[in-house]
Length: 303
Ligand SMILES: [Zn+2]
Ligand SMILES: [Zn+2]
Image 1 (cartoon, rainbow, N blue to C red):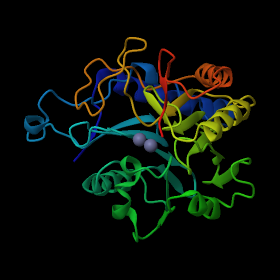
Image 2 (cartoon, rainbow, N blue to C red):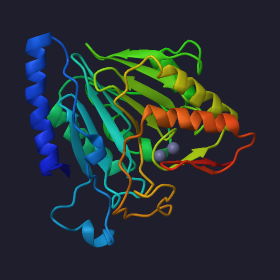
Image 3 (tube, rainbow, N blue to C red):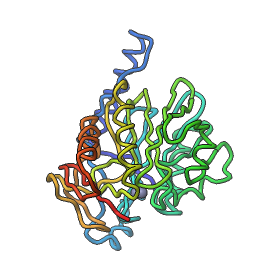
Image 4 (cartoon, rainbow, N blue to C red):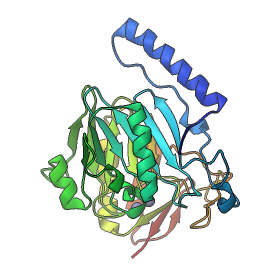
């Protein structure tokens, strides 16, 4: 079941966005800048007793937040899966891009149904990276009419998007009046991608950077990726740096226990370009892989 967030703040933001967009379109003939404040959005964050919560009438598998009419963020319920990933939908004039399908098979079906209520355009289903908690819903999209599913693994990602020089160079994806840029950022795994959308001005960083434990499997690749990411955003206007989980509490340097299904006081989702710079400078200063707390996230080397 899908649920559009129904808090007053969100409704006001959406209403304000719409009238502002209309005014700006009239005045400038261009895109309006979004002004929904993602730092104040309250996300579904699980329950003390998920078994009970799942049977309650108001239970939802996904929470849907419209940042703009054509830019939508979904979060999966922690009671559906403790990973509670975020997925991103960008709608262009000709086609749409979905980044990730969630952490469960049944979640994929309800996500697809929610998207089809929003847009009938052809849909490209890509991923932040190929870990199970971001691709488990793929099966619901596979073979669907009007849907192209990007494979998992660096080879599949390179060939779908036509990367010439992985991971050094970016690729572009045209949605119609909306050209998404993609930058390889391997290190957490081998097929991580960062996405930049010029309409929302989001940088989507997947598990490479989010308010939580940044699991680094390939240290040298990760350092190089963050250096590249930092350089890449220098010439871009960025509204938010958005990852695919929240694992931190609202208190700096305090993370929730791994596998928790209840995060009543979690940190807000957005990070900023300054966080990319902080991560980059810290990685450059570390001689060896070392667990390092940086307030809103933790560098967490793993083998
Ligand atoms: Zn991952
Ligand atoms: Zn993940």
